[in-house]
Length: 352
Image (cartoon, rainbow, N blue to C red; front, top):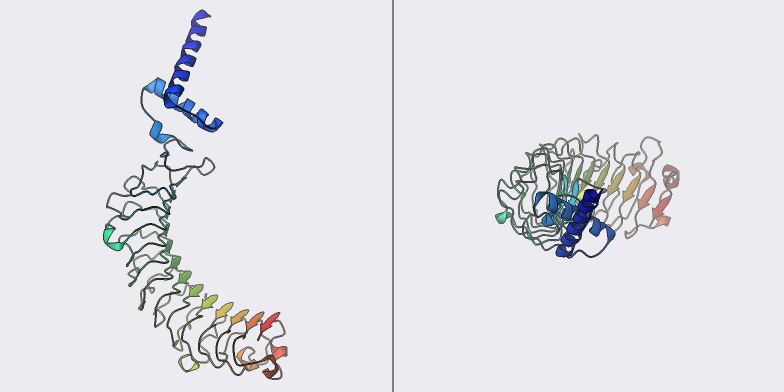
């Protein structure tokens, strides 16, 4: 009994001494974690102070919340290099730091990542190794918004499903090898011509390229596309058969371009699958022909002077349109021809 008591007191004394040496203060959780570290130090004689955090193996400068054991956040820590990453980590947040280069071995110890956020850093294309992402074979989502990239980083994993590079300086789009992409966001860059860069992306469902200087719509849209947003550019025309094979297309937003009726064939937007069409703030003088299935039509801020029920209702059918915006045009509610309200009887908002 005396031996047991002596051993217990000895361990207690050792632990108190170790805690005193580490200078632990703060919450119960911090005390408990430090106690665990002290026990491990006493047993194996190694320094594990670099792993203190919200989970074993987590760098002290980052956090690994216990409720999300596969996630690590190093947000806003003024990091210039990647800290050690536990093998279990799949979701890594490096946003709001000062990372300005990605060398070949930058992610060598992070091969398990599936989600990587590097928004708001100082990245430029010239300082990213061509093989920087080759270690990340399982990466599915990559967010590089608010950097200074002039081109898409090379050798991205072909299994990537979502790529977001908004607010950079992209001037070209070499992306055809990412055949598994379902979402691509390249808003607010310096792109002028997309060519046929999307034609191989046959899994793409969402494409956003607003706020660029694009003069022509991209060629060869994948038939899988459902959402097509290319607002605030310099597009002035749409070819007659541009959307003819787009049986899955539900949302088209082309507001803030330079479209005028001479460059828009009358039936180009008559797309049976379409739910929403946004052509606001262009130079249109007439309402284009749309599908009776369309539910939301935005035409505000154009130069529209006339409206015909035949633009919405075909062969005596009723339109399913719910919202029609014509405010900021040259047409008033009193200018509507007879039959308009009968045609648009399902509409619950019409603005002039």
